[in-house]
Amino acid sequence: MTELKRLPTLPGVHLKDEITKISQRLKELGRGRHLDKAVWDKVELARHPKRPYTLDYIENMFAGFIELHGDRCYGDDSAIVGGLAAYQGRTLMVIGHQKGRDLASRTKRNFGMPRPEGYRKAQRLMQLADKFGIPVMTLIDTPGAFPGIAAEERGQGSAIANSLLCMARLNVPTVAVIIGEGGSGGALALALTDRVLMLENSVYSVITPEACAAILWKDSSEAHLAAQTLGMTSADLARLEIIDEVLPEPRGGAHRDHAAAARILKDALEEALRELETMNPRLRKKERFEKFRRMGVWKENGLTLF
Image (tube, rainbow, N blue to C red; front, side):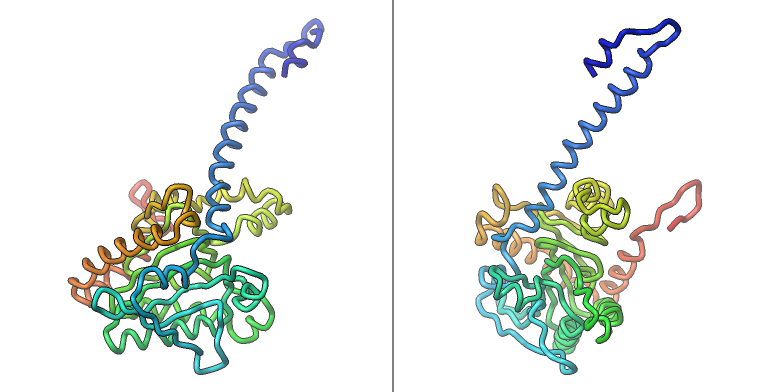
């Protein structure tokens, strides 16, 4: 910009207006890049390899846990864990995505990306909870459902759709918490609940920033810009009323103190359940239905838009 200002001017050529426009644009880009970095920091924290996963929260929150396996159709998917947990004198059904800490466990857990049998297992456990009047809690942390050919052959799309239908029909109180990455239908399949909570440094979106950038700009290196555009942070989603509450994390992030993060989540869970358990089941289901129907709907000039 300094060099541009020093250029010799020719008669009848005026650069002042153009220089002003370029200066303004540079300022806007600078502000955008600053915001972009702040958003990307959240993405990196959500993906931090030492961040607590579902089994870490289970260990720190519940007095006992009995894991249940299999979808009674194809097999057991280790990317989703679930079972009965002892909690404050009552029983909960806890279901969540599980990533791995090292190469062997990441391979076993398929990097937290469930296959159809994982969602069918989750449905089986939720239906079991509903039969015996047990509240359901889900912990969400996945880049998305596994996109492989085998998963498609086994009905990935219908498995996710049936999971949504199953959750919509539950009579028991349900609470979901996004604890890390909430990616696409793979996350939503466990998130159609009465209350959706979100840890401060987690993200929740219809697509990963890398995939979004590859589609829109044919360049996955623009993931930083995609993350900013997607509005995937907890603050964005609270403003849009996609989630019900943002939970603070220990200073520096949940990965710094697993026990403290679990205490925060445990207190929020207790508060949510205390409210939900006093409600009439039919009213609770009705409010759950209306809550999700409102998403993506707004009014302009008296017209309802989608």
